[in-house]
Length: 206
Image (cartoon, rainbow, N blue to C red):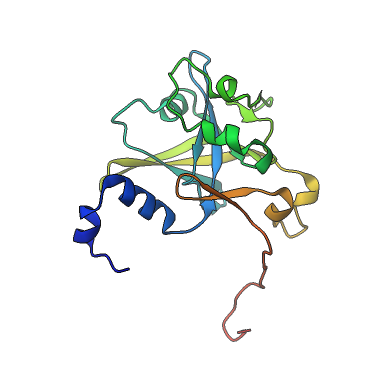
C-alpha cells in the first residue's frame, strides 16, 4: 500500500487514527496516577511516555488538546506530582478500562478495582498492582502548535522496581516482569525472546 498525504486525509477519521497509532509499532504503555486539589484520585492509560534524559532523570509524555477537560493535566497542574505505573497481564482489562471517559468526581481506581498506594514522598497515587512505579514532579510544559497538543516533562523523584529485575548494569528485565507494550490504542503485547547487544562503537561491527 502507498498513501500520499492527500489520500490519507481522504480516509475516514477512525481509519487514520488506528493506522497512524499502529504504524510506529509497539511502544511503552503506562497508567498515570494523579490526585486533584479536592482529593479525587485519577488514573489514565498513556502510550506516549518517552525517555528525555538521565542526568537529571526526566521522562515526558503527550497530552491531547485541552478542548475538553483533561483530568490528568489539571491534576498535575494543581498538585505538581504524578506517577507512572507499568501494565501487566493479570490486570490488563482493568488498566485498559481507565481509558473510558469517567466523570471528574469519579475515581478510575474505584471504577476499575485497581488499588491506590502512596509513599511518604509522592503526593500522587501509585497503582499497587504495578511492578514498576515512578513518582515524578512536573518540570516543564511545551505547546506543540502543529496539533495543539502538550508535551509534559517530569523529573523522576523516586523509583520502585523489584530487586531481582535490575541487573548490576542497571538494565531492567521487562521480559521477566511480563511488562506489556501497546500498538495503537488497543493492541497489547508482551516482550519475549529479547536480544541485548553490546554498546556500538565505530570499527566494532558484528
